[in-house]
Structures are given as structure tokens and as C-alpha cells.
Image (tube, rainbow, N blue to C red; front, side):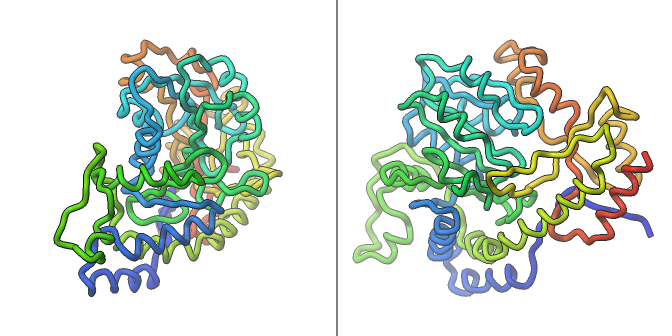
Length: 379
């Protein structure tokens, strides 16, 4: 039988199917009671005061920047090795992207380069918890002056923690993703978290066209026939109640999903340790890795072939792989807009060329992992 092991598959089933029944039967499909329940449960799980559901992590990050009043003339620091959306949201606000390099071992922001890039125009730093490993928040806080906002791009980090504090509660605000490649999914979707009540209030209005009250509040209020006030220029970034219902079902499985992924991440580490050309991801000693992805590093000085050739061989064997992510400064738009070259951020360049994500998700079986390890050893 031909093998076909996907890089990622969402783990959904009867619970998610049944969760959609109530919104479909009641007819309340847009943001409503299910979204509110999902927000409350997500906030409790991550130890934050406020959680606000959005259409995606991208729109969540955009809302955070907009609510903070970041705009033209402001600089926002972004790691050069991340998904392009982390940089795009800065431009959506008319602000300036300032890239910093990353640590080749963790794939996360390099505090040394961060210190070099701070200026009088810096308004915020976006710390990405790439692949589910929290950034070194203590080092970042030691460098970033008071008054500069620290925003977590926690797209990959639902359930992750750093020194007993959960992702989402480590900065001034955070945004999570529920894309199907993430540990838990709502199809598309995101979540903003913060302990800042005023910021949460503004995000809440901005995601709903700038309305002073939500549609649910208006419909359940004493005068549902009157439209709310609109005192802000807002967006339509609301999550649907169908997604909220699925999110509740998925969130109940999050801890089990992470534990299963950790178990097989350990299996990879133990069985691939003797491949001197394949470096394993960092396993944190002071927190919990969410294991959104298991991203290795192919050492080009020791490997029997290039990273891309290895990926080609694995694909031929029925094993899907992917680069970890991309170096944003090497993408055509940013390269041309900012006049950047690959060597400007050498660690991000090297991670772009040499990282390789192996399949790791909750629909895989032990035999799948055994087969992947066997193929890698046979290279």
C-alpha cells in the first residue's frame, strides 16, 4: 500500500460535528453566545483577563496595533524569520517594519540584534513564538525600554508556556491562530488576548466596524431596532458562532493534543539523535512547547544532500515535509520595498534554506513515525 503521511491534519470528529447543531438550529450564525463562551474558556485556559475572537491571527495582530494607535512615523520590530503576516500587519497601519535576526537554535527573535534595532521611533516589538516555542521573554523585557509595547505573535502557541506563564499573558497583548495547521482549529480564525481592559474594549469595537456594542448585545437589549453608535473607524473581523462552537470543542482537547505531540516529539528526538546532520528543535526546560510543528535543521556542512533534495526524497516516499517558514526579508515585496539582501539577516537566511518540518499531528499513528524515522536513516 502506498504511504501518504501529511505534514498536518486537523483532528476533528463527532464533537465538532455536534457542536455546530445549535447555531444551525437557532439561526444565530454570526458572532454570538458560542463565540462568547469560546472567548471565556480560552481566557481562563491561558490565564488572561480578556480574550476576543477574530477572523484570523493576522486580523488579530492588526487590531492590536490599531488599538494601540500605531501608525505612520512609528517603527515596529519584527523577526526576519516568520510568516509574512507578522510584517504585513505593520504596513496595514502605515507604520514602518524594522526586521531583526533570529537565533538559529530556537528560530525566535535574537535579543542581541533586537538591542541594536531599537530607536526613538520604536513603538512596539512583535515577539513570535515560532512553531510553539515561546520566545525568551525575560531577555526581551530586559532590553526593551518601558513604554514600548511587547506584542506576542502566538499563532503557533496555544497552550504553550514560559516560566509558568502561558503564551498570551507574556506581553501587552497577543494574537493566536486557529488555522487547520495549528494544534486546535476553527477552520480559519484567531484570538486576541490581553490583561489591559481599555485595550480589550477598543479591540472589541474595532473588530465590529467600530460599533459601540456588539450585534448580540443590541439584539438582546431593550431597543434592538436602533443601530449602535460608530465613533471609530473599524473593521469586520468577527468570528462566527459556528467557528466558536467548533473552537469550544477543540479547546477541550488542547491539553491532550499537546501531550500526544510531546510524546512523539520525544520519540523523534530519541530515534534521530544519531543523525549528526539533522539538528533537533529546542525542548524548553522552563516551559511548555506547544509543538505546532516539529522543525529540524539540516546542517549543510554534514548532510548527505541539500535540505530540498531530502524533502524531495521524502515526498517520493509518501512523507510530506515543509520548510519551517520563510525569511520575510528575502520575499520579493519586502526585498524590493526595503532594498534588503539575504546577508542582511544571515540567521534568518540560513533558517529559510535549512529548516525542515517533519509530520507531527494528532491523526498520526506510531507506525507513521517509525516509517519516517526509517526513511531518514536510510538516506
